[in-house]
Image (cartoon, rainbow, N blue to C red; front, side):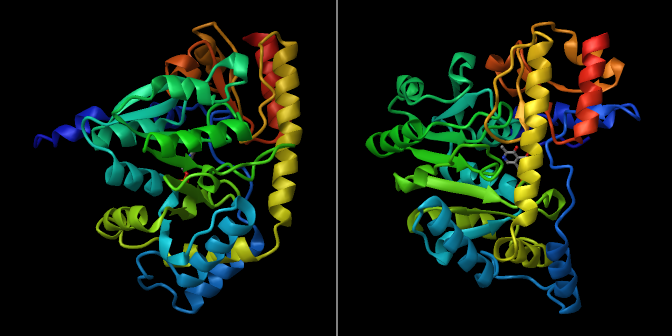
Length: 369
Ligand SMILES: Cc1ncc(COP(=O)(O)O)c(C=O)c1O
């Protein structure tokens, strides 16, 4: 074996993926992080047409201009962000956008504020870039919402960036407007970057999503098509930042992946410009399932916040063997500790599974675990 570069030592393969690979057949999977719906037909048709039209060449490095123009419109109309197609990069999923944000703006000596608990990829991106993670607890007493006063406490002269993720994976928490605005102000006053992962923006119930880039110039806004349009395997995401920041991000993007997939970009264009009925249907079905899973867990005595977005709940379950016992009984869940120390004593359950399966899974947990 050739010695790997030392940077690979600071990251590990995903334990969650490993666990899924070991899942026994027939188990109900409440561990999964992707919609169980199919890509809407109009998007499939657009991609088929794109292949027939030989749209299979390299695209401009930042992505097709038509797509970037639509993304710019979306940012303006829905997020209050005034940006330009030139300051938008279409990426290989939000994952690439996170990776290049870390590579472009983090290095050794930088302190990076990270909500605790949070999505696993953040930790890996920060570690690969050499940044030092400074956790900021998202407390259950605050329904896991990140609070500006807790962020303020952790700011030092070395603070370089914070990652925000609202609605959140793994808790489903949706941040309050006043906290988003206050953190945006802090980023200007203390000169640090906000990396705002808004991938679950549309999967939100009875609540409005706010983008920090409305209030601060120091923001990289990240979004994508995986969750809203059930396009996980097609790998299209995007970001915007101001011109100077975008240029640095573009250097990493252009020199690593060149461009996002051409056919999938045509699908993404259709997703933005076509009818949105499928999205609305999917979100109302997620809400129905959220109501079911939250009430069943609370009835069982597992204190569970009525998560306002994404498709996860994060019940308090202190039995350390719960995840294993549930898996043995046929229900896959993920230990909250996987998402940070503040996730200990919790379990992440995804309701990206059918209503019937969620019902069955809750019966199994009630009877046998
Ligand atoms: C919070 C969060 N950000 C980003 C991603 C990655 O999204 P993409 O498929 O666009 O790379 C995920 C996927 O689970 C996620 O949960």
